Amino acid sequence: MSTVVMHNVVSVDGFIADAADEVGPLFEWYGNGDVPLVEGGAMKVSRASAEYVKPIWAGIGAMVIGRHLFDITNGWEGRPPAGEHVVVVSHRPRPEGWHPEASYHFVDDVARAVAKARELAGERTVAVAAGDVGGQALALGLVDEVAMDVVPVVFGSGKRYFGSVDAQHLLEDPHVVVQGDRVLHLAYRVRR
Image 1 (spheres, one colour):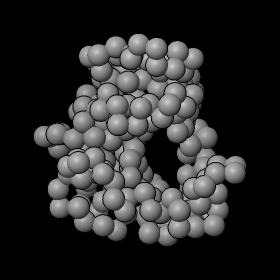
Image 2 (cartoon, rainbow, N blue to C red):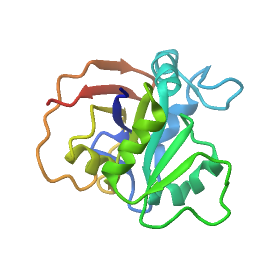
Image 3 (tube, helix red, strand yellow):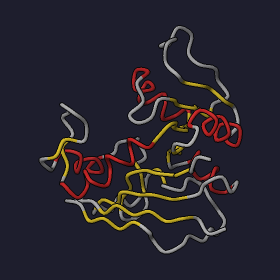
């Protein structure tokens, strides 16, 4: 069965974007190295980050995102940044005529979205975007692991990594700690 991993790039103080959805310096580490993340791609990172990120991305079978992320990225024009399938949590249907060939599924409930993503991913990883949808999945006990790429910047306010989670959730000690260039990759299993 697939592992469900909540993931995002995050500021030291726990924000994935500012209030205007701008990521500022959070993604700068994607261009500060000399190792391409994808063949022929412009994103180049440090060797340590590449050795960590490449197998993670290769292992993703499906992503779960919220409608807000879908709207601001236009669903990456039907080509997910990782994995083959995207499940969008939304009360609105897929936009009419939007990339009919793309394996994007619109589901109106977080639990059903994670279940659909698990079905689509098979044995591969389900990546759940942090923020409101990720926080809801964590609160429902659907997340197996919390992963974050921590960038040394303080936002002070903005969109929170865990969304509006208002209860305590225990994590194990990090089983992944990788120091990249201007980023620290961390992963924690969720304590059951």
